[in-house]
Image 1 (spheres, each protein chain N blue to C red):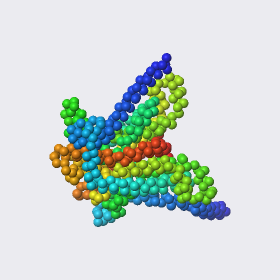
Image 2: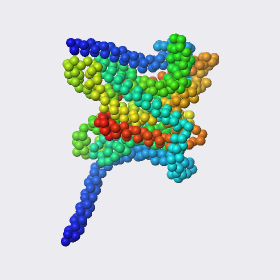
Image 3: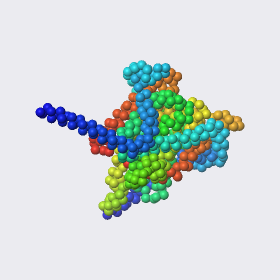
Image 4: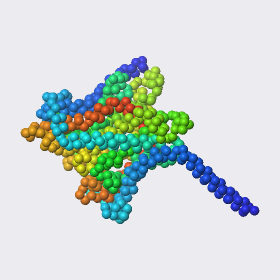
Length: 327
Length: 296
C-alpha cells in the first residue's frame, strides 16, 4: 500500500518535472521570440571577446609545453613547469622582480594620494577662472603619446643641449646625464607619469566632490569649522570610497608596469635598473634571434597569475574590513 | 572669536593653496610652452640654449624639415587611416556589447558581464596574443592595428552604465507597445539620446589609436604601414633622421642644430590634432568619467 503510494508520488513528481521543463521551454521560447535581437547584437562582441581575450588564455598553455612551430599549439609536447623553473633559477630573475616591484610600488604610493590632493586643493579654490585654467591645463599632457613623452624627456635631459642641464650650467653645476644614470631611472619614470596623468586622474575625484551637499559645508562653517577641518571631515569621506576602488584596481595592475614607456626609456646604460617583466618577455619572445615562445609565455603567465591573486586578495581584505570593494 | 580665527586660518589656507596650484600650473605648462616656442625658433637658438620662454629668431625651418621627411608623411597618412577605421570599429563593437548588457531583461547578463570583466584582471600575455594574430594572418596588415585592441571592456562598462541610468525604462515599454523591436529601439531612440557618452568613448578610442605604437611595434614589419608614432620613435628616441630631411645644410654643427629643432617641431605636429580637438570634448569628460565611476 505505502509502496504503491510512493510509486505514485514518484510518478507524479516526475510528471510535474516534465511539465515544468515543458513550461520553462515554452517560456524560453516566448522570451527568445521577443528578445532574440538582443542576442544577435551581442553575438559580435561575444565572439570578439572569446577569440581575442580568451583565445590567448588558451594559447598560454604553451607555457607548459615546448612550443614547436611545425607541431603547433595543440600537438607540442607537454613539459610541465620546466619553463617556470628555468625562469625562477635564471640569473635575471631577482633583478627583474626587484625592478618590477620597486617601480610599481613606487608609482602606486605616489600616484594614489597625489590626484586626491590635487582634487581637494582644486575644489577649495574660490576663484573660478583660476580653477578652470588649472584644470584645463592639467588634462593636456594626458593626450600626449608615450613616444612623444619619452622624446620630451630625452630632449629636456640631454647632457649637452637639454634645458635642464643648460639651467644647471647657469648655476655652475656640472651637466648630469639623467637618462644614462641607473639611479635616476625609476624616479624619472614615476614622476614623468605623475606629470602626465595627475590632472586626468583627479577628474574622478572632482566629480565625487561635486556631489557633496553644500549644506554640509554651510552647517560646518556655522559651527566654526575652518577650511582645513571641512576638507578633512566633509570632503575626504566623499572621496574615500572611490580612492579605495581605484587602489584595488591599481593593485591588480601592480606588475603591469607600462611596457611602452619603459621600453622606450631603456638604454644600455640604465638597463640594470630598468629591465622589468614586460620588457624582458618582449625581448626573449619576439626580439631575440632564437624566439623562445614557450619560455616568454611562461614568464608572462607568471605575471598575470600574480596580478590575479593580488587583486582578489586586496578586494577580499577590503571587503572584510568593511571598506568599499569591487565585488 | 572662534569663527574669527577660523576665518583667519582660511585666508592663510587660500593663499597657500593658490600658491601651490600656481606652481603646479607652471610645472605642467612650462614644458609644453617650451616645446612650442623652441619649434618656432631657429636651430642655432635652440642648440645654444637661448630659448627660455618665447621663440628666439622666429623661423619655420623646423617645420620645413619635418615635412621634407618622407616617412613623416607616410606615417601621418597611415595614422589617420588607422585612427578613423579603428575608432569606427571599436565604437560599433562597444555599442553592440554595451546595449544588451544594459538591459535588465537580457538573460545571462550577469554571466556575460563576468566573462567580460574577468579579462580586465587576467590575460594570456604578449606571446599568445602575437601567435593568435599571426595565426589569423593579420601580421603586416592594417587589421593588426585595428582589431586586436578594438574592444576596451572599461569603455563597455562606462557605456553600459550610461544606457542603464539615462534611458528611462518607460521609453522601452511604450516603444515596445508601439511594436518597435530592439534593433529599431537602439538605432532610433537609444543612440540619439546618448550623444555625450558616444563623444567620450569616441575620444578615448581615437586618442588610443592615434597614440598607438605598441601594436605597430610587434605586428608590423613593412615600413610603408608604419604609423606616425613608430616614425616618431625612430626620430625622437633613436635619433635617426634621413639625409634628405636635413636638406642642403652643410656643417656638422648646423646639422646637429636642425636635428634638435626638427624634434620639437615634430612633437608639435604629432600632438597638435589631439590637443586641438580636446577643448571641444572636454566638457563631456567629467560626465563620462563620472558615469564610469558609478558602481555597476
